Amino acid sequence: MPIAGGGGRYIDAMSMVIRAGLPADVPAVAEIWNDGWRDGHLGHVSEGLVAVRTPESFVERAGSAVSDTTVVTVDGVIAGFAMIVADEVEQFYVAGDHRGTKVADTLLAEAERLVAAQDYHAAWLAVVPGNTRARRFYERNDWADRGRFVYCADTLSGKIPVTAHRYTKQLVTEEPTIR
Image (cartoon, rainbow, N blue to C red; front, side, top):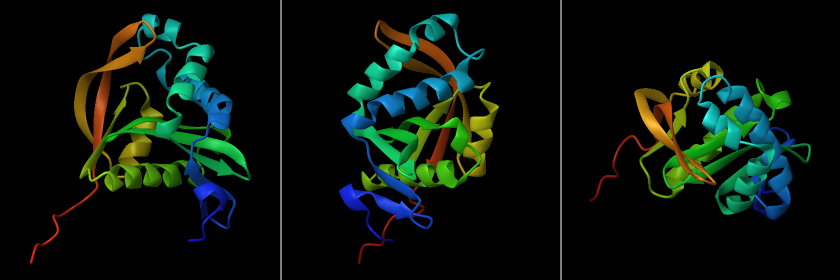
């Protein structure tokens, strides 16, 4: 696979590029995050969490997580992002006009690769029960629903408990043989 300038990787006839997030990406990441979060969470989380998830909060959060962020661009425009923290795919969002394309599958495969590259054998993520589109997407990509748990969502004023489903995916199927 050819390497793109700036350390990115070209995908699918060079229209899609995956690369590390940059400070200049913060506005686009925050917009995708705000829109996607609202699509997947409104009506499924507490009003207290909705009240603190303002557009400005996503700008601040995206700015503080640049080093954890990987973006996918299509024709030079950010189409989605993932934030990886240890073995967790902590955030994963694709712009509305790129949903249902190869963008999400490609970005999720990269998120899995990034977790595995840190020597984790499995990755996990949290999805609110009512976000059926996301849940179907992860299940279609061989993630297993391990049941409900309480996820503590970080906010500027502390943590807010959120009921979520814990999805996991085994990344390494067997230990290497030592000879």
